[in-house]
Amino acid sequence: MTELVIQTKGLYKTYKKRAAVQDLNLEIARGDIYGFLGPNGAGKTTTIRMLLGLIQPTRGAIHLFGKDLKSEKMNILRRTGSLVEYPSYYGHLTAVENLEAIRRITGGPKSRIAEVLEIVSLTKEAKRPVKGYSLGMKQRLGIAAALLNNPELLILDEPTNGLDPSGIHEIRELIKNMPRQYGITVLVSSHLLGEVEQMADKVGIIREGRMVFQDTIDNLVSTASSGFRLSVSEPEAALGLALDLGCAGVLRDHMLELESMQDAKIALLVKRLVENQHAVYRVEEQRRSLEDIFMQIVGEGSRV
Amino acid sequence: MMFRALSADWLKIRGKGIWFLAALGPIGLAGMQGLNFGLRYDYLMKSYAADPWGGLLENVLFFVPIALFLGTTLVCSLMANVEHQLSSWKQLLALPISRTAVFSAKFVQAFLILCVSCLLLSVSTAVLGIMLGMGVEQMPYMDLLRIGFVQLFAALPMLAFQLWLSLTLKNQGIAVGIGVTASVVSMFALQFPDWMPLKWPLMAYMGPDQAKVIGAGLLLGALIICAGMIHFNRKDVD
Ligand SMILES: Nc1ncnc2c1ncn2[C@@H]1O[C@H](COP(=O)(O)OP(=O)(O)O)[C@@H](O)[C@H]1O
Ligand SMILES: [Mg+2]
Image 1 (cartoon, each protein chain N blue to C red):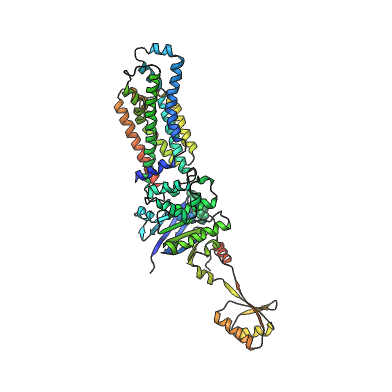
Image 2: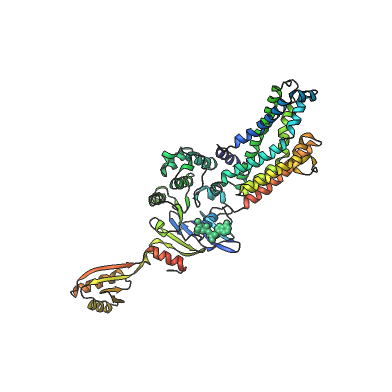
């Protein structure tokens, strides 16, 4: 069994009788990049604040590194780096001074400051007051701060929010390397599937405070196929042949529209068509985009 | 742990005008008396002929409580604002450090800054006296030191309360409003009953029962710090 770095059981947070998070069971394994998805207001930040001990859960248990957050908070936080919502910084201080303010609390060698600045490519700007930074630079400084104490777990709340495409790309590359290069487990939240799908191993989708999907990204992808379209020389005869083979489908615009099927079956169908002197011009898989699936999940709250 | 947080706090208040404020208060008070004595030199020196240093201290004394309360209010607010301004609480409190240590460090920092102000008040009053031609041999060292520090101890409840308000309320208008109101009201402190903390600084300097008043200041201050800390420990951080 893989070791769980984050595990919550029946987590609730209620504000004035309105539940921001309900019955949440998160499971994040060591070395994973976990994409924590949900539209704005779904409860991502609230969950992350609870994981960091910033707010008290109304009900439920939180274990990080297999330890209870309530009783071992300091030990857990020592192994965790975080960036919650928009980045926090002291605008009048330089990047180095900002990191030094954190290092004075967490301990560790001064040389680590230069290391993390290097990782997020801020070395050149390190001596400027942070209030003059662009949003992307502030965001990267936030990630540097999270990395300062050599964490085993990195919790990043919407780290790409408000960035332009190149900024998003940079941060994505940065995060992708974390498990590989440093053995860090990452929880990264976002309201856009597209932002995490290229880096996450596993995703949890939350909607109105409830988890509606939690599985590997591969399993999410496998639900994406919705059928095939075939363009052939004699569509009507070809459809008959397909139906004989047990495929389900119809004819539309001189093309065969067939329901989703296994690889072996589509191969067999193509082989038969060719054997029967049909010319096969095109075989298209019709895929719903991941974004469509995501929208469907967060829209209806139904399981795919 | 508290010292780690304190060390970080010294870094954070750099260039925030807090040290400027801490110096401005006492030097301003001495400057005011410099003006007062300079303009009415002959008259004042004649009326305080028996004890010129005592006369100077008496004139300074009246303004110390309001300066102390105002200073407390502003120092606490400026310090807290460093964290509130860009919501740094969520970053700070997610570090491996207890909230008790964070709160204590802020208190110790505010207290030390005010100690520097009190020391500056003693020094600048002494310098003023010498400049006004008062004898160095007669200089009342103890009273010069007491005029700031003794009142600071008696003002600890106010410091604890303002720190708590400033740290827990993001809107500094409330904390500053309350603090300024208290400072202004304190100008009429001599007419208040003895149990009013706003009167304690003057009582702690002038007596009677100086020791008792200072003790009360320490005790009530400690109680408020404990209450503030318990609240700060449990509070949700947004
Ligand atoms: N301090 C608070 N008081 C009241 N409601 C809150 C508070 N914080 C968050 N909420 C509510 O909880 C819900 C979840 O918010 P949040 O966790 O910030 O969502 P997300 O990060 O997924 O966008 C929202 O409806 C929000 O209005
Ligand atoms: Mg959020």
